[in-house]
Amino acid sequence: MTKIIRSPQILRLARWDEKLAALTKTAWTGRDGRCYFPYAPLTTAEYWRSDVAAAWRDGSMHSWIMVHRKKVVAHAALVRKDGYWESGRWVALPDAPRGAVSALCAEAFAFARRHGLRLQVECTQAHSSSQFICERLGLRFAGIGVLAEIDGVRWDIIYYDNLAAPPFEPRPGVLGDPLGRDICCRPEHRRRLAEIETVITTERGGGLPPRLFHVLPHLVEPVRRIILLNR
Image (tube, rainbow, N blue to C red; front, side, top):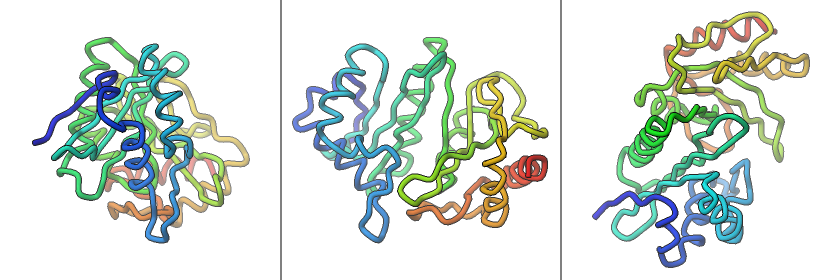
């Protein structure tokens, strides 16, 4: 039996905090046994029990989980930011039903539509699965972003949003425009952009830590143009 449960009903599950921490840690652990999740607190039961539960209660975060055969196998969330909502924290176990995260995102995006929420997604470059989900569910490509190095690992972003507008059009000085906000290219970004240019791939990916910049085939050209116009 498979079912989707939304916060705050999640709080009724036995050991829900431990299960979600373990899910996050497992989903982001590489073959070397190291967990590479950029936001380490989410791999601890204490953080789920304190901060996340409080966010569910005050309405600043909404979560959806999939329970398959009495096991928590996937999670997705909407998190309130300054003037918009971010959909993220997408994780699934390797043995989760096919399309588990897509199903949870469909619920989350439908919730956003019903409530008129401005929605943004920051897909990691480690794989293209999240990009596929965004496009399948009707979101708009909104450019890329360069993050700081975290524990020796470079993380980059492929932006999506729910604006009713054409995809981001590359232009000088700007890496993306999620929800109409320009992500300006700063001098310190140029070195990383040059690195990205050499590791772009259309392979689906998923290995950790990320070594390549995984994008959907039709995004290769716009990503290369973003780099060309800003290097």
